[in-house]
Length: 74
Image (cartoon, rainbow, N blue to C red; front, side):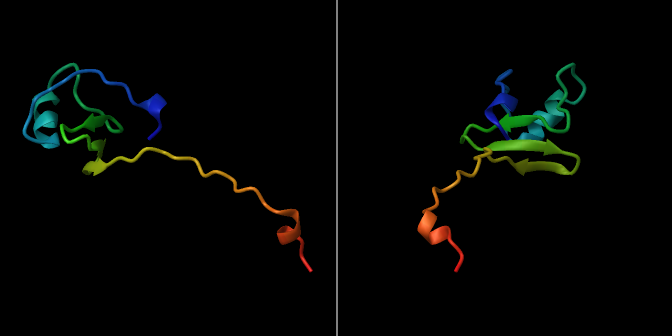
């Protein structure tokens, strides 16, 4: 996930991610596939068709500077 995709919307107290899903499923704020939940522990879960899965921050790979001599093919 990317920070632009993560917006804290509301705080809901529940015993688990599934308890949040049950509490919200018939409300206007029902969880949709792709929604994120931040647990009290700081762990972030993403709601998928099959349940909840750990979400991770996207960290782009950085290109390492190459040395011209080591990059030359002999």
